[in-house]
Length: 286
Image (tube, rainbow, N blue to C red; front, top):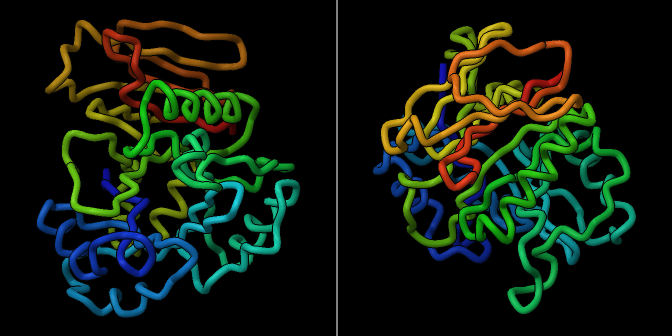
């Protein structure tokens, strides 16, 4: 079971241009049927959107905690989370508050430039315990790959190799209608036993167990210790390559079927001919 989810979106409940209903219609028109409503510091749009065409899509109930020093996206949120009592040294409290609701929380666009765009966009909060971070937005489609997203990829990779169970995600950070096809996408890579589970359960399990793929196109599938990379429709397969990263170093591969050691933390990445990361997955140490 492979399911696409869009995890970072805004409406006019905060600073977006679309209404909650226009957002839902736009996604469903584009065959995106599982998406988050993650407005800044408010959950006001969630209750009315639950009842809107609820047989047409799965709503991920979310919020982007927008502090003066960085942003944290919370999924499966139950109620608003206070955020304005923190400083740069105690952000762990926000993760605790999210987890107290059985929600999952992660860092949004950690290296996005701040001034002159706005205070708080760049993540300048000190995380004292990265065990509390469930995911990192390694790609934000509003940000430059070279200046921002490449650094987010590197931060996430380093933490996974250190042993932290942090999944990668991508985010449209949608505020207006924008391209939703030729972009990085997030997929939940679950087995078929999850087909009849609700989206909150699917997302929670995938994030916490490293069953998340971020990709522009290639699909990285892992079955036990065997890895296969497929779906190079728009990329020339012979011009791409794979890197497998563990604490012992980096292996560069041109074979798209290989084995990994499930006993160690691993990051698998697919690169294009310009060395740009076009797909990634983590394997958490068992």
